[in-house]
Image 1 (cartoon, one colour):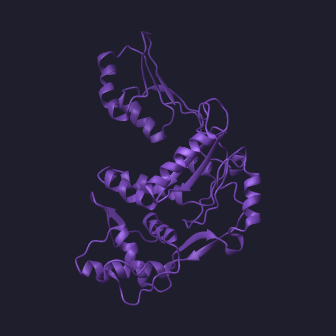
Image 2 (cartoon, rainbow, N blue to C red):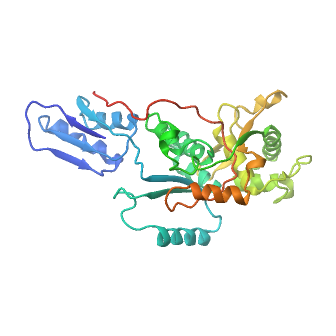
Image 3 (tube, rainbow, N blue to C red):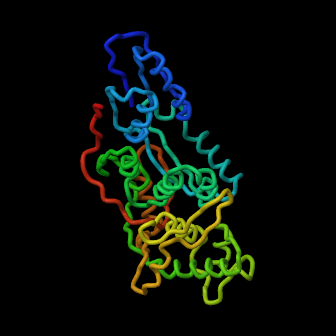
Length: 336
């Protein structure tokens, strides 16, 4: 984005580039002290809300605003499960960089990957950092939703963030989800949710606080015996899927949510848990259909259809419902 103040008397321009957002408050004094000076502000990415805030702080509300689309067609977007072992994670990154990346990482218009590594523990580590911010947890859960999404075009999801609309067809299979040739189905996870509530209620009665790891251990029949609940059978699912189910409940505000809080994140029963008192209330998640999962031929076919040298890993992930987005791909140019 770029904004340029409308002034009758042109003077030497003050420019601010790559300036941390927190420092913008101090920069507002420039226009107050030198009201006749022209001011130009540049940034690579900003939402409409951030743009308006920056204009107000810099005292250049009456200005022309020029924006371009976020999209760079040479970039491939992908979300990967972060290895649980730190050494394995570092080794994976090193191999990725040494084996595949040269040049300017997409700035030279050559194809490049934008890979986001995501792990369940990241949610609560970051939550403890942003809990005191006005919209910190909201933004965090939006990011979790992006990572958990297994079907929607990544460009469509990113476009939402920047107040643009995007058509998946124009992605040209330049994201991991658009490269998938599999079908999805709705999984009923209501019973899992009820089991988790039982575990959390018992912990509350015992005046115990459950971290995410303790909650999963109890659910799997591990950890401290006093935290286990009679009648709650360990799910016949891998730990990764259990983590995704809990993350799903965190971000599914319209159905049910746990709340992470404080410097050390604990989980407690959310305000909408009573919805499950109604036996007809159902919570669902999206998952790969069993018939489409991980046949060797299907994996090979997906790799062959992947553009350039981008190699894909098959993903079996649960996530929230699809978003319906249609329309043109570019945001209108603002004229304040």
